[in-house]
Length: 140
Image (tube, rainbow, N blue to C red; front, side, top):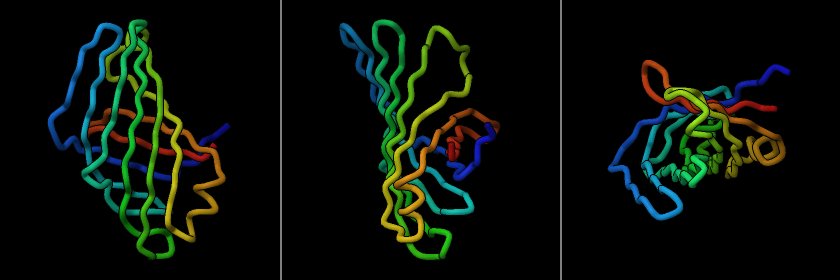
């Protein structure tokens, strides 16, 4: 089944990474901002985004990023999209630089995008490229 691309997010890291090593897990919090380009929405990732990663004793990394997009929807109206993007990655099974997959959930104040973003299933894929980290979302 072919995936239909809906958004391309370029991630820019914008602050100190916080780390905590505990008895049963490591927690890493990565602040970021960025930009988003697509046929349905163009704008920025507000600089308050954070990717929280918890690595458990089995070396499974649970990633949960939450962030707000601000820009224009496909009608030209001002709009916001809140993204909660979750994924899991086995640190021992994949070489460094490997792409990862996620499951995003979207909430929006855009009247044009709400019926689509609130009722369609999506997947995400992150990968390091020459210009940095990209997160791409697809309709499934």
